[in-house]
View 1 (tube, helix red, strand yellow):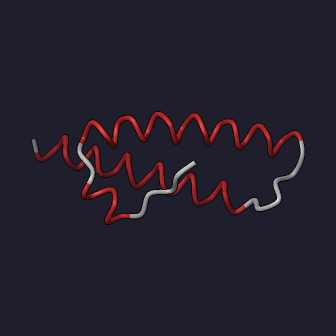
View 2: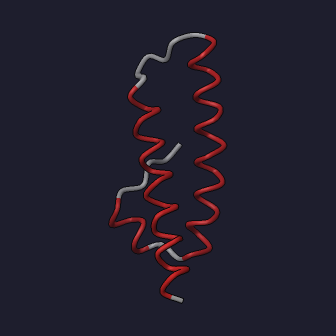
View 3: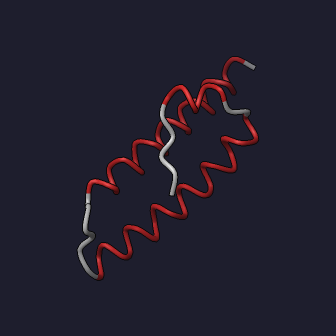
Length: 67
């Protein structure tokens, strides 16, 4: 589970971002499932994962529009 910050997102290649998006979405769904069964020690992980996914998706959309 890696949370990508904006500078990391900008520097990554499109292929890397697509791979990271798939991994992050999978990790987020697993984290959500675990949280529904028993509360996480740090529920803020969910928010940071969601924001990271949004950063990656936004960058991919921006690159698609500029292509």
